[in-house]
Image (tube, rainbow, N blue to C red; front, side, top):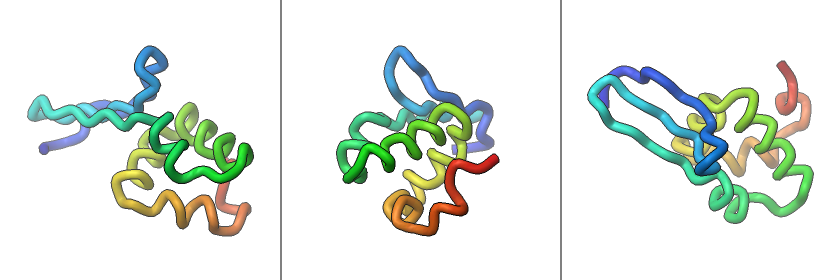
Length: 81
């Protein structure tokens, strides 16, 4: 993979898509991720907020395998701009 060109949520596929300069693309199935890591509707809402407002940060959490830590951490770091 080379340089990241674009990261956005695709509403048609419900995926956060990352496109790189070498033509590589990663699509993160947000529904599957939520089904795997979320225990409550509040957690789903927090992830939905990230998906729509900060898809790159969402992708970094998923790919860095730190999403569960994010959801279990203090609420002060979530849902803030």
